[in-house]
Length: 527
Image 1 (cartoon, helix red, strand yellow):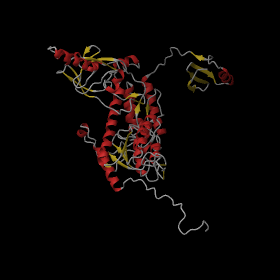
Image 2 (cartoon, helix red, strand yellow; image 1 turned 90 degrees about the horizontal axis):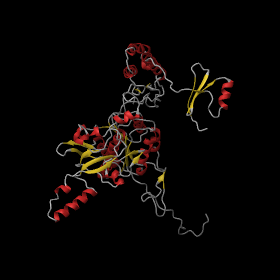
Image 3 (cartoon, helix red, strand yellow; image 1 turned 120 degrees about the vertical axis):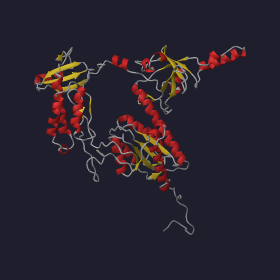
Image 4 (cartoon, one colour; image 1 turned 60 degrees about the horizontal axis):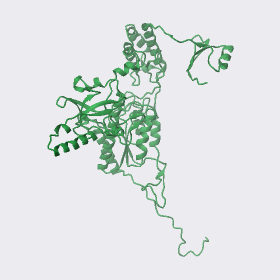
């Protein structure tokens, strides 16, 4: 009672059942008496193996050879094409085996595995994981000491101002502070600091100290931000472009001193003040900047559409993996399902496996409309059936970093005639996988296992090694992108504007009410 089963396996000789519970490791004989005793051991205190101090000796050279053989064999047995693409797979084994004998560390074995698996020229071949001699040895304390926290802003060292000047603070959707458990605002933003009664910084303000140390006393401010992610940190800041309660009090004091004819310059200008912030870890910082880009792109898309004279919904999907991807689609789609146009942005999408659900939602068609005495489809009434069916025009944005299921989604939109594709040719991974052909140390050389096709296109759906070719090809100029111009997004708006001009989205007319009165000249109801 209270114990959970974590692992169950047979011994290699088949004579014992090995079960790992949260309370300990239990070994039972695979005999009638052994199984009976196992079933009757409700307290799980019999046949418990003493695993305290258990160690396993490894001969790396032999283990590397075994993992190479296992990886080669599982690629042979798992790869979707039994002919291995026409390769002489036995000769591939012999070609790279001598290199394995020269591997002195796990990273070198990874290199050999990549070369061997790369002979298949399949995009969903990845080599990762396993046991590495990492310097932190998996010790959380060592990892934390070497992790640099972030203040969630772009900073520039300024010798003229004796500190680090705030250049940019990323801003995100004000409707969301925490999404999927991650903070969406910068630690220096007023949206974060107002909750503790403080005022945020602004571009042009300067950070001069961290926890009592001058930022100019070290080569880089990051040296003062190690091992402080998620903890309170005291900054000393000089406000040039933002205000605070302390600054307002100083200004009031200055006015009083000036009214007495005294010099008040030092009371207001260039005086540091404390600010307590909680820095982000590296993952949180990356997420913050990406989320800021998402919000800015969505707002830009809406403004461009408004200027072009139509209503627009915009959804960006980072990947197609699980609840976070589903949440992103729901947050973006359902508030805007009734717009004239929709952009689903899968640029930089890492893949996953929810394309069928997205396509199912987008394939809904309105066939019936609702209208009462006071409500209809234009003023907040029930709208239409099927509920939440999108009636407008759809554009999918892709680029060279759109991969895997992001590509499958784009291909599905094209094949089903749901919309147009705009951007750049995608990554080119059209053979799917389950990533379950693991090696003995937990690493893997993934095998593309599942070929996909339809009645029009052969295996790979013209994605594998080719990528999805957009209907309208346009690249983002690097210089323009750095300056904040999204040429692919602008082109998508142009495509939708032209599309709406040729095929406007209009609501159907209700038609006249039925005339239930008796017509003139009819004396009774007889036929």
